Image 1: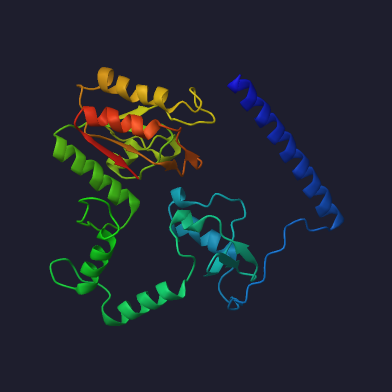
Image 2: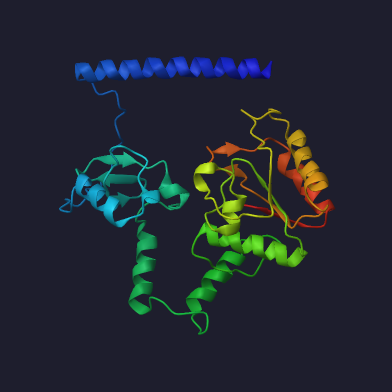
Length: 287
Protein backbone atom coordinates (compact mmCIF):
# COMPACT_ATOMS: atom_id res chain seq x y z
CA UNK A 1 0.00 0.00 0.00
CA UNK A 2 2.80 2.39 0.88
CA UNK A 3 4.49 1.81 -2.48
CA UNK A 4 1.22 2.42 -4.30
CA UNK A 5 0.71 5.62 -2.31
CA UNK A 6 4.23 6.84 -3.06
CA UNK A 7 3.76 6.05 -6.76
CA UNK A 8 0.49 7.99 -6.76
CA UNK A 9 2.11 10.98 -5.06
CA UNK A 10 5.03 10.95 -7.51
CA UNK A 11 2.63 10.71 -10.44
CA UNK A 12 0.57 13.68 -9.21
CA UNK A 13 3.74 15.70 -8.52
CA UNK A 14 5.05 14.98 -12.02
CA UNK A 15 1.76 16.06 -13.59
CA UNK A 16 1.84 19.29 -11.52
CA UNK A 17 5.40 20.01 -12.61
CA UNK A 18 4.51 19.47 -16.27
CA UNK A 19 1.51 21.80 -15.95
CA UNK A 20 3.70 24.41 -14.24
CA UNK A 21 6.39 24.20 -16.94
CA UNK A 22 3.74 24.45 -19.62
CA UNK A 23 2.23 27.52 -17.93
CA UNK A 24 5.64 29.18 -17.56
CA UNK A 25 6.42 28.47 -21.21
CA UNK A 26 3.15 30.04 -22.33
CA UNK A 27 3.68 33.04 -20.06
CA UNK A 28 7.15 33.59 -21.51
CA UNK A 29 5.67 33.56 -25.00
CA UNK A 30 3.11 36.13 -23.88
CA UNK A 31 5.70 38.27 -22.13
CA UNK A 32 4.20 37.65 -18.67
CA UNK A 33 6.53 37.28 -15.66
CA UNK A 34 5.19 34.65 -13.24
CA UNK A 35 8.11 34.91 -10.84
CA UNK A 36 7.03 36.17 -7.40
CA UNK A 37 8.05 39.72 -6.59
CA UNK A 38 10.91 40.09 -4.12
CA UNK A 39 10.21 42.08 -0.94
CA UNK A 40 11.69 45.52 -0.53
CA UNK A 41 15.37 45.58 0.41
CA UNK A 42 17.23 48.81 1.01
CA UNK A 43 20.68 47.62 -0.07
CA UNK A 44 21.85 48.82 -3.48
CA UNK A 45 24.68 46.68 -4.93
CA UNK A 46 27.88 48.31 -6.13
CA UNK A 47 27.97 48.64 -9.94
CA UNK A 48 29.96 45.74 -11.33
CA UNK A 49 32.91 46.44 -13.60
CA UNK A 50 34.57 43.03 -13.64
CA UNK A 51 34.76 40.34 -16.32
CA UNK A 52 31.60 38.83 -17.79
CA UNK A 53 30.22 35.41 -16.91
CA UNK A 54 31.32 34.01 -20.29
CA UNK A 55 34.88 35.29 -19.78
CA UNK A 56 35.06 33.81 -16.26
CA UNK A 57 33.70 30.48 -17.49
CA UNK A 58 36.24 30.38 -20.29
CA UNK A 59 39.15 31.03 -17.90
CA UNK A 60 37.82 28.54 -15.36
CA UNK A 61 38.09 25.80 -17.97
CA UNK A 62 41.78 26.67 -18.41
CA UNK A 63 42.93 27.29 -14.85
CA UNK A 64 40.64 25.19 -12.64
CA UNK A 65 40.26 21.39 -12.68
CA UNK A 66 37.25 19.97 -14.50
CA UNK A 67 35.98 18.40 -11.27
CA UNK A 68 35.18 21.93 -10.06
CA UNK A 69 32.93 22.71 -13.00
CA UNK A 70 29.57 24.43 -12.43
CA UNK A 71 26.37 22.40 -12.39
CA UNK A 72 24.64 24.73 -14.84
CA UNK A 73 24.82 25.38 -18.58
CA UNK A 74 24.61 29.11 -17.91
CA UNK A 75 25.87 29.60 -14.34
CA UNK A 76 25.19 32.84 -12.49
CA UNK A 77 28.01 35.31 -12.09
CA UNK A 78 27.46 36.26 -8.45
CA UNK A 79 29.35 39.40 -7.53
CA UNK A 80 27.92 40.59 -4.21
CA UNK A 81 26.00 39.32 -1.21
CA UNK A 82 24.06 41.03 1.54
CA UNK A 83 22.24 39.20 4.32
CA UNK A 84 19.92 36.63 2.68
CA UNK A 85 20.38 37.95 -0.85
CA UNK A 86 22.87 37.57 -3.69
CA UNK A 87 23.39 39.87 -6.66
CA UNK A 88 24.57 38.99 -10.16
CA UNK A 89 26.66 41.07 -12.56
CA UNK A 90 23.55 42.91 -13.75
CA UNK A 91 22.44 43.85 -10.23
CA UNK A 92 19.60 41.33 -10.20
CA UNK A 93 18.76 40.13 -6.70
CA UNK A 94 18.31 36.47 -5.71
CA UNK A 95 17.05 34.94 -2.48
CA UNK A 96 19.78 32.57 -1.32
CA UNK A 97 18.12 29.41 -0.03
CA UNK A 98 21.39 27.49 -0.44
CA UNK A 99 23.64 29.36 1.98
CA UNK A 100 26.88 28.52 0.19
CA UNK A 101 26.28 24.78 0.69
CA UNK A 102 24.92 25.52 4.16
CA UNK A 103 28.04 27.36 5.29
CA UNK A 104 26.79 30.96 5.38
CA UNK A 105 24.73 30.52 8.53
CA UNK A 106 24.60 34.22 9.45
CA UNK A 107 23.81 35.54 5.99
CA UNK A 108 26.14 37.22 3.52
CA UNK A 109 28.42 39.99 4.77
CA UNK A 110 26.73 40.23 8.15
CA UNK A 111 28.02 43.49 9.67
CA UNK A 112 29.06 41.87 12.95
CA UNK A 113 31.00 39.13 11.12
CA UNK A 114 32.63 41.62 8.74
CA UNK A 115 33.63 43.87 11.64
CA UNK A 116 35.18 40.98 13.58
CA UNK A 117 37.17 39.83 10.52
CA UNK A 118 38.42 43.34 9.72
CA UNK A 119 39.43 44.08 13.33
CA UNK A 120 41.35 40.82 13.68
CA UNK A 121 43.04 41.19 10.28
CA UNK A 122 44.28 44.63 11.23
CA UNK A 123 45.97 43.18 14.32
CA UNK A 124 47.19 39.74 13.26
CA UNK A 125 46.29 37.55 10.28
CA UNK A 126 47.95 34.27 11.16
CA UNK A 127 50.11 32.49 13.67
CA UNK A 128 50.35 28.89 14.90
CA UNK A 129 49.41 26.99 18.03
CA UNK A 130 53.13 26.98 18.90
CA UNK A 131 52.59 30.47 20.29
CA UNK A 132 49.91 32.14 22.37
CA UNK A 133 47.02 34.25 21.17
CA UNK A 134 43.94 34.93 23.24
CA UNK A 135 41.52 34.98 20.26
CA UNK A 136 41.99 31.25 19.65
CA UNK A 137 41.35 30.39 23.30
CA UNK A 138 38.42 32.83 23.50
CA UNK A 139 36.73 31.13 20.57
CA UNK A 140 37.38 27.63 21.91
CA UNK A 141 36.02 28.58 25.32
CA UNK A 142 32.88 30.16 23.86
CA UNK A 143 32.27 27.11 21.68
CA UNK A 144 32.90 24.64 24.51
CA UNK A 145 30.37 26.48 26.68
CA UNK A 146 27.67 25.41 24.22
CA UNK A 147 28.71 21.76 24.07
CA UNK A 148 27.01 19.12 26.23
CA UNK A 149 28.54 17.02 28.99
CA UNK A 150 32.30 16.63 29.08
CA UNK A 151 32.88 17.83 25.51
CA UNK A 152 35.12 20.76 26.41
CA UNK A 153 38.24 20.43 24.24
CA UNK A 154 38.08 21.91 20.74
CA UNK A 155 40.22 20.87 17.76
CA UNK A 156 39.92 23.44 14.97
CA UNK A 157 40.01 22.27 11.34
CA UNK A 158 39.64 24.00 7.98
CA UNK A 159 36.76 21.98 6.53
CA UNK A 160 34.16 19.32 7.15
CA UNK A 161 36.36 16.79 5.37
CA UNK A 162 39.19 17.42 7.84
CA UNK A 163 36.83 17.26 10.82
CA UNK A 164 35.38 13.94 9.71
CA UNK A 165 38.80 12.50 8.86
CA UNK A 166 39.94 13.41 12.37
CA UNK A 167 36.83 11.85 13.94
CA UNK A 168 37.28 8.58 12.04
CA UNK A 169 40.98 8.42 12.92
CA UNK A 170 40.28 9.07 16.62
CA UNK A 171 37.58 6.39 16.66
CA UNK A 172 39.96 3.86 15.15
CA UNK A 173 42.82 4.75 17.46
CA UNK A 174 40.65 4.80 20.59
CA UNK A 175 38.89 1.49 19.92
CA UNK A 176 41.70 -0.39 18.21
CA UNK A 177 39.23 -1.40 15.49
CA UNK A 178 39.36 -0.48 11.83
CA UNK A 179 35.81 -1.10 10.58
CA UNK A 180 33.43 1.86 10.31
CA UNK A 181 29.73 1.70 9.44
CA UNK A 182 28.27 4.43 7.28
CA UNK A 183 24.95 4.87 5.45
CA UNK A 184 24.27 4.62 1.74
CA UNK A 185 23.65 7.95 0.04
CA UNK A 186 25.61 9.77 2.74
CA UNK A 187 28.34 12.34 2.13
CA UNK A 188 31.23 12.95 4.56
CA UNK A 189 34.09 14.45 2.55
CA UNK A 190 36.60 13.80 -0.24
CA UNK A 191 39.78 12.65 1.49
CA UNK A 192 40.80 9.01 1.98
CA UNK A 193 38.62 7.81 4.87
CA UNK A 194 35.77 10.27 4.32
CA UNK A 195 35.55 9.38 0.65
CA UNK A 196 35.28 5.76 1.68
CA UNK A 197 32.49 6.65 4.13
CA UNK A 198 30.72 8.60 1.40
CA UNK A 199 28.27 6.44 -0.53
CA UNK A 200 27.63 8.35 -3.76
CA UNK A 201 29.47 7.31 -6.91
CA UNK A 202 29.89 10.85 -8.22
CA UNK A 203 31.90 11.81 -5.10
CA UNK A 204 34.22 8.79 -5.15
CA UNK A 205 37.38 7.94 -7.07
CA UNK A 206 38.89 4.57 -7.92
CA UNK A 207 41.42 4.44 -5.09
CA UNK A 208 41.89 1.99 -2.24
CA UNK A 209 39.16 2.57 0.36
CA UNK A 210 39.07 -0.02 3.13
CA UNK A 211 37.24 -0.68 6.36
CA UNK A 212 33.92 1.01 5.54
CA UNK A 213 30.59 -0.83 5.47
CA UNK A 214 27.51 0.90 4.08
CA UNK A 215 24.18 0.15 5.72
CA UNK A 216 20.76 0.64 4.16
CA UNK A 217 19.73 4.26 3.84
CA UNK A 218 16.83 4.84 6.28
CA UNK A 219 14.96 7.00 3.79
CA UNK A 220 11.35 7.26 5.04
CA UNK A 221 10.11 8.16 1.56
CA UNK A 222 11.97 5.89 -0.87
CA UNK A 223 13.51 3.34 1.50
CA UNK A 224 12.66 -0.34 1.44
CA UNK A 225 11.18 -0.22 4.97
CA UNK A 226 9.43 3.10 4.64
CA UNK A 227 9.51 5.00 7.92
CA UNK A 228 10.29 1.99 10.12
CA UNK A 229 13.59 3.12 11.62
CA UNK A 230 14.10 -0.01 13.72
CA UNK A 231 14.09 -2.28 10.66
CA UNK A 232 16.79 -0.19 9.04
CA UNK A 233 18.80 -0.30 12.28
CA UNK A 234 18.66 -4.11 12.17
CA UNK A 235 20.78 -3.92 9.01
CA UNK A 236 23.52 -2.23 11.04
CA UNK A 237 23.42 -5.11 13.50
CA UNK A 238 23.66 -7.64 10.66
CA UNK A 239 26.67 -5.85 9.19
CA UNK A 240 28.41 -6.05 12.57
CA UNK A 241 27.49 -9.74 12.95
CA UNK A 242 28.30 -10.92 9.43
CA UNK A 243 30.59 -8.30 7.86
CA UNK A 244 33.08 -7.58 10.65
CA UNK A 245 34.89 -9.33 13.47
CA UNK A 246 31.98 -8.42 15.72
CA UNK A 247 33.29 -5.03 16.76
CA UNK A 248 33.51 -1.74 14.89
CA UNK A 249 35.35 1.50 15.49
CA UNK A 250 32.23 3.55 15.04
CA UNK A 251 29.20 4.66 13.08
CA UNK A 252 29.05 7.86 11.04
CA UNK A 253 25.90 9.47 9.68
CA UNK A 254 24.31 12.79 8.87
CA UNK A 255 21.24 13.46 11.00
CA UNK A 256 19.77 14.95 7.83
CA UNK A 257 21.49 13.94 4.60
CA UNK A 258 22.49 17.09 2.75
CA UNK A 259 24.25 16.29 -0.54
CA UNK A 260 22.07 13.19 -0.87
CA UNK A 261 18.91 15.28 -1.16
CA UNK A 262 18.06 16.78 2.25
CA UNK A 263 16.71 13.50 3.59
CA UNK A 264 15.66 13.22 7.21
CA UNK A 265 16.38 9.77 8.60
CA UNK A 266 13.49 7.49 9.52
CA UNK A 267 12.05 7.98 13.03
CA UNK A 268 13.68 5.92 15.82
CA UNK A 269 16.60 4.98 13.57
CA UNK A 270 19.43 6.81 15.31
CA UNK A 271 18.39 5.81 18.87
CA UNK A 272 18.23 2.17 17.75
CA UNK A 273 21.64 2.38 16.06
CA UNK A 274 23.08 4.11 19.12
CA UNK A 275 21.99 1.17 21.27
CA UNK A 276 23.50 -1.31 18.83
CA UNK A 277 26.84 0.51 18.67
CA UNK A 278 26.89 1.02 22.43
CA UNK A 279 26.43 -2.71 23.00
CA UNK A 280 29.57 -3.35 20.99
CA UNK A 281 31.32 -0.82 23.30
CA UNK A 282 32.44 1.33 20.41
CA UNK A 283 31.86 4.93 19.30
CA UNK A 284 29.08 6.74 17.49
CA UNK A 285 29.78 9.78 15.37
CA UNK A 286 26.80 11.73 14.07
CA UNK A 287 27.06 15.13 12.38
